[in-house]
Image (cartoon, rainbow, N blue to C red; front, side, top):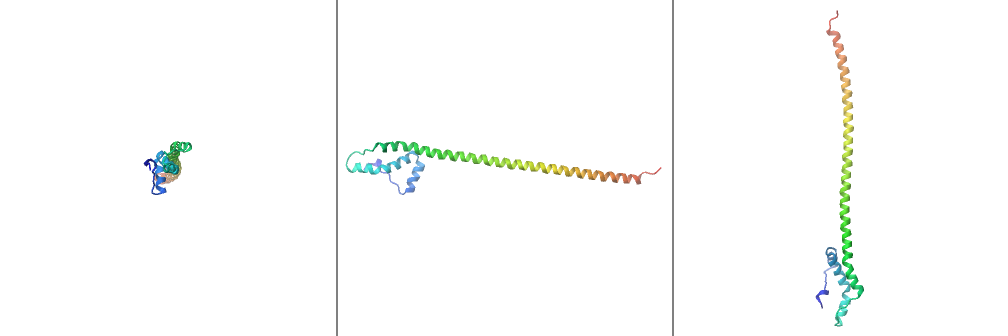
Length: 140
């Protein structure tokens, strides 16, 4: 048996792991497994293994197809990561904006309270001053 066609895996999980991480080589490995019966049949007759045109086309198209699928998955993951970062930045910006608005409202309320207290204290101090002036000045 020719060593080119002897692809053996311990389990389906190992085969799929090789396909997932192997890219085009993994796709070729799966096609080699799919075409083994034809090759084995040709070897039992003692003839050179001849593959059909559809099998050759399938082998030639598997690498780009696997690369396109894996590339699409990787691109989708990258886009998703950047979208999540952008959404997180927008949420942080909105929270910062609402915190700033809340602080501005607190400052305005504090300012109004200060102005009210200053007005009350000024009027009380003025009243006390005029009351004390009545007793301090001698009447002529």
